[in-house]
Length: 247
Image (cartoon, rainbow, N blue to C red):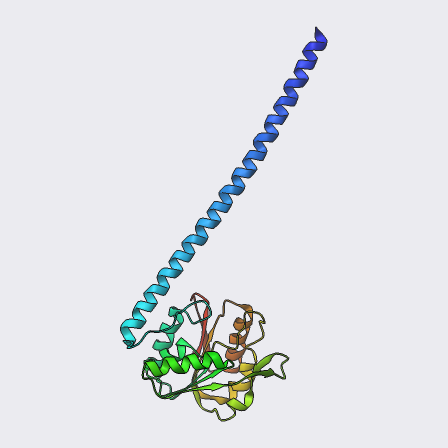
C-alpha cells in the first residue's frame, strides 16, 4: 500500500512538473507572438505615417508648381516628395544661378520649375538621361542641360562619374547629390566632395539624399567639415536628407 502511495506521489510530481514546463513554454510562445505583433504594428504605423507625409508633400508640390504634363513616379529609386518639396523651398529661398545635380530624374524637373536659372544634371545612364530629357520637353522646361558621364575608376577606389564632364563647372550655388547609385557601395558618392568642393560658390547649398545610410551621412559630415562657414541640418525625410547651408 505504501509503495502504491509513493508511486502515485511520484506520478503527481512528474505530472505537475510537466504542467509547469508546458505553461512556461506556452508563456514564452505567447510573449514572443505578442512581441512580434507589437513590432509588426509599430512598423505598419510608421509606414502609414510615412505614406501620409509623402502624399501631403506631393499635394503641396502640385499646388506650388502647377504641372502641365504628367510627372513620373516618386519614391523608391526616385526622389521622395518630401525631398522634392525641400528642393523647391531651397531654390526659392536662395535663388541659385547654377544648380548642379548628380543623378537626373523628377528632381531635375522640380528644380527647374521652382525657378533655378540654370541646371546641369549629370547622369551615368543614357536611358535615364533620355527619359529626363523627354520629361523636360513635355513640360516645356528650358535652361536645363542633361549630361552623360559614364562611371569610371576613380582615384578613391570606387567607380564615379567621368570627371571630364565636370571640368567646366564653377560657382555652383546649389549642389544636389543623389547619384551615382549607392545602395550596393556605401562609398559610391564620396568622391563628390573632393571633385566639387572647390567648384562651389561662397554661398553654395549642398543637398545629399539617402543620409539614412552610413556612406551618405559620412559624406555630409565631410562636406560640412570642409565648409567652416556652413552648418549641417538633417531632415527626417523618408530616406533622410542632409542640407549643408551658409550660417
